[in-house]
Length: 228
Image (tube, rainbow, N blue to C red):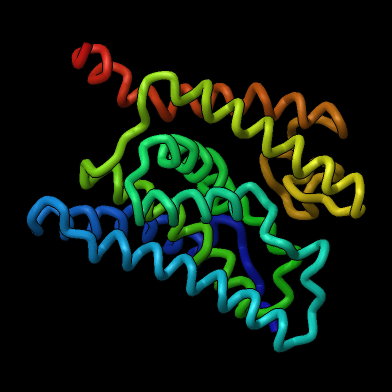
């Protein structure tokens, strides 16, 4: 049975505070080890993969259909796979995409969670562990100085976002799903609530994504200029 969740209530605020705190702890631990120490990176990647496996194991155990509505095709699912790859490889291109997906998408999901489909306490916990550790992993890599977004990463991330949205939209059209909320807004109050009716809120999201991505790159712009 799900618990009653209050937006920005005590439990929600604790969760929001725990995310940057854990990221800072992991980053501080990483800096105490010699360069090239991989156990923390691999550990965070394993946590994310185990959480995903537990989620689908839970669904299978409860006889819930996975195809087509519950496939891992949401933007945060794609970001999870990207950050797992980044944690294992430190690939700069993959990290560029994961950085904006995590801090622009998963953070928004944490701030205004859509728990309408979280029909049990387990699924609610999974939602916050999933999105929380995506953000934790990205902040950990940045704060431990193992990765950072590169110049022109905003443009690459926006291009990748639109390509993925086209794929998700095609899947939605064929299978009557609603991945990335391209067909309808979530039931709970989120940022999409104030962005207008369908399909105009999709266009509004383009502008919001551009502004968010530019703001997320801003802390690195000056150092990138100095490096030239």
